[in-house]
Amino acid sequence: MDAERDTEPVLTGAKTTRVSTDYATRPMRAARLAPEPQSGNGWAIVFTLVALGVLGALALVPGTLSGPGELGWDGLVTFLVFAAAVGGWMSSRLDDTFVAVAAAVLLVVLGVLDSEDVFEPLGEDQIWLLIAAFILAAGINATGLPSRLSVALVARARTPRGLFHLITAALVTTALLVPSTSGRAALVLPFYLTLATAFAARERLVRALAVLFPTVVLLSAIASLVGAGAHLVTSEILAGTVGERIGFAQWLWWGLPFAVVSSHLAAEIVLALFTGRSDRRTPLRVDAESLRSQLNVPERMRRGEIRAAALLGVVVVLWSTEPLHGLSPALVALGGALLITAPRAGTVAFGAAIAEVPWSLLLFMAATGALGTGLTESGAASWAVQNFLSGASPPAVLGTVVALSVAAHLLVQSRSARSSVLIPLVVPAAIAVGMNPVALAFASTAAAGFCHTMPSSAKPVAMFARIEQAPTFAPRDLLKLSALLGPALTVLVLLFAQFIWPLLGLRL
Image (cartoon, rainbow, N blue to C red):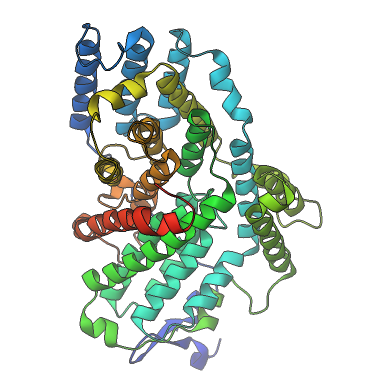
């Protein structure tokens, strides 16, 4: 290689930075992540088990903490098993799925549930929808389409604020492509590392980007029913308790506006907290060609990308128009999964796509669905609500549910586990005060998407916190972010629940 061609320019700000063409023309290396630290929350486990244990013991005494009727043996057993499950989910040493399955089996052994209550959820439409969605995501990711979309948007940036909002728009879009927050974080991590190299001379901007990526990945998941396993948990619990499941089109109609507003609000908060005025005023230009080279994205779309984009468009349209054609979202997703893995016509082998399905999440959903059934059928959930929400007004219940949902990540790290804890209690609470249980459950699920306080609060946050190849944030940065973003998200959920979602057909 000639000496004059050893470097090529990449414009990153007021001046030109030169990066090695060896780096610029090869795919990004896999990110090196530091070992994940173990979180110490034993105090929370002990406190919860003791508090719920005392509650259960008091329920044995006739007339103590009793509502219109005694709790009963089944209700007490369910409470104690549920308390043990919550304690297990708080522990970083126990697998969430193991805890959920063990709790469901214990309820069957103790006679609270029938064995069918544990096995039947595995055949539900929502389980098959998630399986097919992960197969579709594997086929789409194999083409490089998400990277092309990100490059196309980010290359338009001319200012740091424009860059942050274009990245936010791209991340919101990926919520429709990849049904997993941790999967989306892993997908965009190489893109962040590429930007970190391009803007190496502007370290504060790079650190702010490290905060932005996981923050928006988590908040934007609410856009889609398949954006997080917690959404399917919420839908299944609603179906089992009030007989009303939230469909894909409904979730998109309610969730996408909230995802867009909350994500762009978060982008502004990150800009304000982690960049200075001079950082925001200094212009920049992202070299699209260099980004494409580093991410191994050719200039022209490949046939596989075109097929994947067309198939995704058809699937999303069919999902969103279910009332017109009557095809269930699960059936549509399965059809799309078969097409994207078909020999010659597909983009990924069926076996490779199946390997991407998180089977432990499916078992978790089935087991927590059984726990929710136990809480409802044993009368434990309604008994708790009648005793502790007696005389409460709907606004007070809404405020309490949203605040608890925002704070729940401090105790229960898994997003799906938080919904499994909260929604079985939220539904009877809504019924007790004359509210729409679907609206209150949706508000709780949206609020529970906030999990940014500690690196251990969510997998995307932990993933970006452990990067070794580029500057990233410190735990104190997350505390600073949460001090502003947490209250802002709480207020935003309350505003949407009171004014926006009712206009979209979701009345309290």
